[in-house]
Length: 93
Image 1 (cartoon, one colour):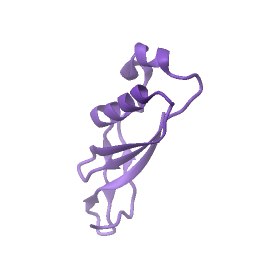
Image 2 (tube, rainbow, N blue to C red):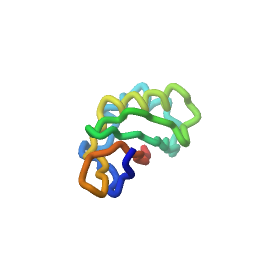
Image 3 (cartoon, rainbow, N blue to C red):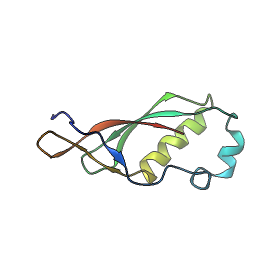
Image 4 (tube, one colour):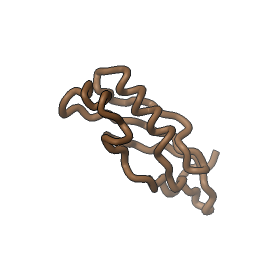
């Protein structure tokens, strides 16, 4: 596998309350962020999602990974030779 010389870049807007949904937001512990580690494939799609620091509510953390897969798109990472490659991306909500 080639190393990424340039990291992936988010090209869609960050997730908002509209995508997350009122029922999830009502359960979200106030002021608690969720940190996701996203594997972005060479086409710019999320192929893996790990919750590195969750909200403490497993259902919310799972929904955030599902939304990352469905809604977030990236300009993929690039190798030193200019080829798109898979790479990790940190995302906080």
